[in-house]
Length: 179
Image (tube, rainbow, N blue to C red):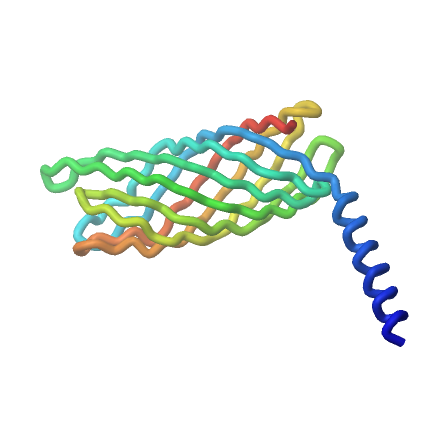
C-alpha cells in the first residue's frame, strides 16, 4: 500500500512539474506617460493633477496572465491663498492583469495593484500603502512591441498635519518591448 501511495505521489509530482515547465513565459520592459489626479482634502483643498511618468518590467505567462513591477513619478506645483505648494509622488507598484483576447492583435485587460506611494506635499512627507485596480486595452504592434491604454485607481491613506490624499487616478499609455 505504501509503495502505491509513494508511486502515485511521484507520478502526480512529475505531471505537475512537467505542466509548470511547459508554461510559456515571456519578459518585457517598458515606459509609460499619463495624466494623474490625486484627491487632496483637509487644510489644502486642491486636487493635484499633472503628467505622470512610469518605468515598468514584467512577465507574461501563457499570453493571458501578466505580472508587472512599476516605478512612477508625478509632480504638481500650485498656489492657494497666496502660498506656493508642490506635491511629489513616487510610486512602487506590483500589478496582476488578466488579458482577454478580442482580436489577434488586441487584448482587453483587468487587474489589481498593490504597492507604496511616497508623497511629499507642502513639506510633509510620508510613505503609505496603496491598493486598487486597473483596466484597459492592449494593442500588439509587432511580435516584440505593444502598447496599453489604461485607467488605474489607487486608494491611499496619506494623512499628515491636516492634509490627506484619498486616492490617485491615472490614465496612461505605455510602450513595451517583449523579449
